[in-house]
Image (cartoon, rainbow, N blue to C red; front, top):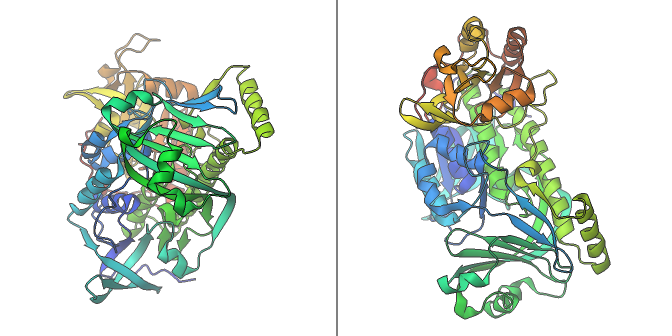
Length: 555
């Protein structure tokens, strides 16, 4: 084990990011938003021009919005419609949909997107930060760790060699991660390994009516198949390959069109991509080796059945970067970085296990077992197809940097309501920012924050009060007490549901903990101070908060 030095850095960079796909690009933007000196490398110069990931969710769009890149991404995004699951006899057995409005994070909860232009937008945004250097056409040959940093030997595609040093390295270099291999980190197999063909087509306008108008999962034991509606005229099929089929031959256009023949002919659409995959469920046994971290597909791989693959990678870097910033600035001990694996590994494992269970149901090949499955799923809905939401499939954080007290809200995503401001209707993050926040229920006495404000500010918490436009119980106008006014009572219902009056929110929007009284709020802040290993005074100043595009205004 390398002993990590606390001496001032003499390294070329504070962080090197290996890989400039979506996870690497967002990691780079987050590092740049904190003003961290970063070098990002990728051996490929251009974005892959075919779609791979196709789904994102409201947590990820919130991250894009915080970074100021959402407007560049949204033209290539569309709502993800309900997915209807059909059983062995073609009957509807259940639906997977999204939670209804008002949406808890302010955005459509489930979305589809077109990867190449979105990835290009993420790259361009990442490269725009002054503290960021991007070096494309650059391959990592090897790395070596020491007490003072990481030494990386690089080779450019013109044959030039160079060596750089960094405090930390983040490996976002994909499922076949060279960094993971160099470190000898083993992937744990969660026992899911199925061959599938993924087909993307651009459908002619006149042929769109031939296709289902919602996403569909055909749980047919003869050939399990997924149908996804992408943005515009983009449609995707994920088709299970049978034991006798050669994955390479399955990719050939003649075979692809034969598989699609029940829906389309070659005259109806343009074949965009056909690629054979093995759908895996894998988790790295180590996410951190001293100064090197794995993120994205380098750390985990999961079947695509609810479209969480890319989301998982972006959650990784959203979790890690604010912790790195604290450690690099000396505001927390290096041990804070151990919570990255503690939190993300458990979350990825739980979600992958749930996705795997869905996949096992979908992939049932035995006809009798499939009929029993259909009967069981229908019985769970009282004999009718029931609807579950994609959002309830994604678990909260279960461990790590969370309050010590029992609290059913901790580890969940904090809501983001629409609020009324002087400039009009805005989402809460536009006013509150995305750093550490203490958010209080503005329907309660305004005195609570006057007594705790100094303590909160010493801890670097941005203090915000959010109230409903009219307090239904008292009839008082919350705005009269200086609270930000929410428009749809999303937060009011959240506070009522969790029986609390205040919540401390992490920079990645997960709830650290909640309080129902002034006394419990003080205890919660003392707990946070201890967990962050932060002195009682001299907390982070506002200039060290992430430089997101949203303005931050006092409550």
